[in-house]
Image (cartoon, rainbow, N blue to C red; front, side, top):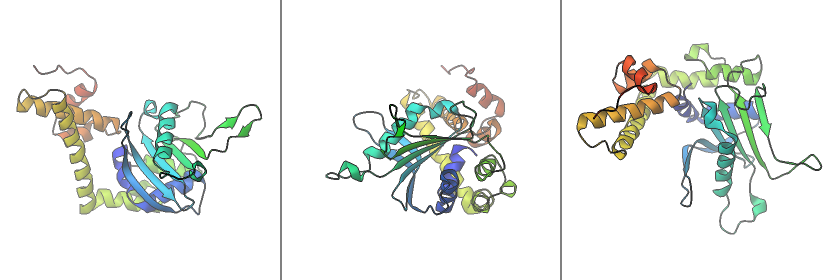
Length: 261
């Protein structure tokens, strides 16, 4: 699944619960609330939009990120996301001891850390005594290419399925079927693509593309194509969405197109 499609899957709370229960090995986990594309504004530094931020029945704050490229899931980025969760949790006057547990989960296209494990659990330790530093923050990396016959492997198998009929999870299959095979689902995906296209147009205009409608439109299409490719979409899918032929889209993505003058 591309991360665009995955965000729409996660809009169904049952899907979020199923994914978290599997990754965290917590069959009783319940998601009380969640926000898709949570926008953390930082007036003093870099802001960030997190794919999915959920709060569970134990009070944990959990961020799920689906990354098609491992360079988008660096340890530093995971650390920054963890800090954003913490910074936006306590109210003025609350004690630091009231800070809830937080968990940042990166689901990557390959092995994000390179040690050959299907899943990595990261938490701070006190080096001198080899004991956990119980600050309540955790980071997890999941290799989506791991498709072993385990609950986690079967979940990752479903992440790579393009059709609901191929999926092993009834919960995920139901949501994918809704998005791909119903009128309402098609409308949802079209609205998402339209939002991305508008953002690409805005970026094109921001970069000075105001010297003619044709040039601005072409720039916005290139920006949109790059954003969709980053989210894991194929060249034919991108070409259909932006209204260009596949050869042209391929050239854009390979950075071989000349800038119009």
